[in-house]
Length: 482
Image (tube, rainbow, N blue to C red; front, side, top):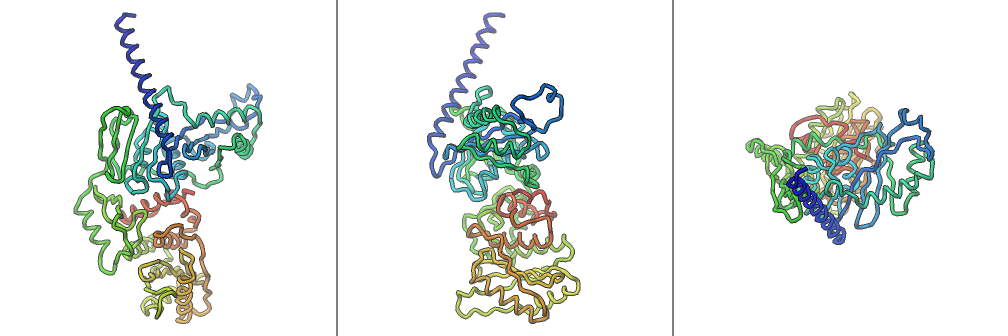
């Protein structure tokens, strides 16, 4: 080996070591800066576990087809606590869809922090790829976080907080036999008091297919493997700021796709046609509108109320795809807390519902309470029931719904029982229209449950927007995220 070659190799090793030190220092700075507004997490996969697992594995088992179990860990630096998601190869692999799905489960529908920082290793198939970056960009673009940072350890220097938890887990398994997945989950749950174990094996569809939606919303980030730090902000939607090292200059890329602006503007005008007043729409409502490359003011975005046009369009789409369902219209009503409240169903709506009695169809009536809340009445001719649903579960809204239902039963639906549909209960102050639409959807698709609404709100709203814009039928796997 020539002297020049040795010098060049030594310089490369020195640069590699310096880069590793810089990222390790960055990691320490971030974990020390955790606060109620700043969430720092680290995610990683552990080495797969084979079942059955015994402390003294017979050598012949190496040649048998054992069940492979994946363990995905997320360490929360704010709480000094780790959550391990466990599933077998029957449920999924170790790709980007699985990573994004579990990360989304962990973050939840309503984050309480303003800044999110995620650390991971450089594995391209799992973490360092366009789909994970696009998901984090979506979190910032929709305003769920004011800032999202995605940072990677240098290859060969990826030891992190998750590995400490995995080490404790490995020591526990070295002393304990596990023949079933339930035994394995129990053993891992007892491995450390600072670790939570979540089994995804009993969940029907634990992983969400993000790729189609992400590909329609954003372009790919070129040369993604050369960068170690990515930053996305709500103030600069759709733009990813990339750095090779903490001290390197920033390189910004706008990943928003460009669409026909006339088509997008026509859609915005259509969605705001007459009889479509905005229901307490916030001035800060921005939506990722796939019909254009800019963020439009649009009520399908997370954190915004649905207006009449959205409800009407959704019901029209729903009834066109599911036979035996009909949309009767929107009824205006007042809550019991308002003086002089008079509640009555228009004659044309009563006539339309009565026309469906003979066909054993499901009829929808959506109720607007003075632009403060949405509710619905669901008439099932087959079971002769009139279901009432108020997502807030408040008496001041349930009582008017009952009165409207009794009026309906007296106008030609004699013998129908009024049934209160009490779940799911709305978890925030702005999703009443979204909950009502989901409740209507559960009445025509038996594969959809109310429990599915309590998780994955971002994904559902994006699929909802995709459905309205493209007039495409809901794909069940878009809503099976539990």
